[in-house]
Amino acid sequence: MPEGPEIRPARPADRDAAVELLDAAMLEVDPGRVRERIEAGGVLVVDAGSRLVGVCVLAPGDGETEAETEIIHIAVHRSRRARGLGRELVEAAAALSEGPLTATFRGQVRPFYEAVGFEITEAGDGRFRGRLR
Image 1 (cartoon, rainbow, N blue to C red):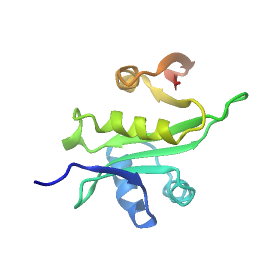
Image 2 (image 1 turned 180 degrees about the vertical axis):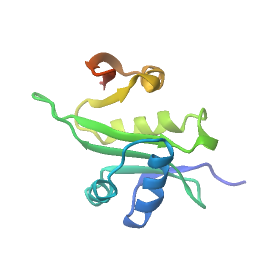
Image 3 (image 1 turned 60 degrees about the horizontal axis):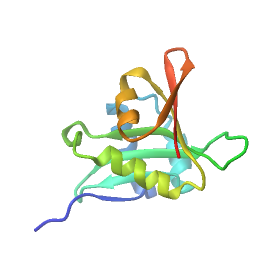
Image 4 (image 1 turned 45 degrees about the vertical axis):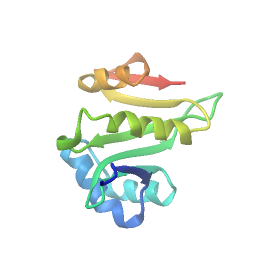
């Protein structure tokens, strides 16, 4: 029986597939920044064996008193959504963070962040800021 997808740190060879996933989710992506975050150990991917089906790009947050980790981008392939992979990526990211996990996002993805347990506040410009403890 085949195993399910594996969440693992991204490798340099994953960069193009990760950028494609983020682009397909209509996120503004800088491939150079994704490469930098992969090299720093700040990208998690969902590896389905033959292809990547999820990606989460992390960076140090700007918290003043605690070590925060910020989700810069998160995306799951359209064919794999609503199966808990986004939640699993968030849980894996939270496990890596030495402090709270944060994210700034557009209103249309607010239900996702609420569902995975983020406390949400308005950030202005139609964006929101979430924090997971």
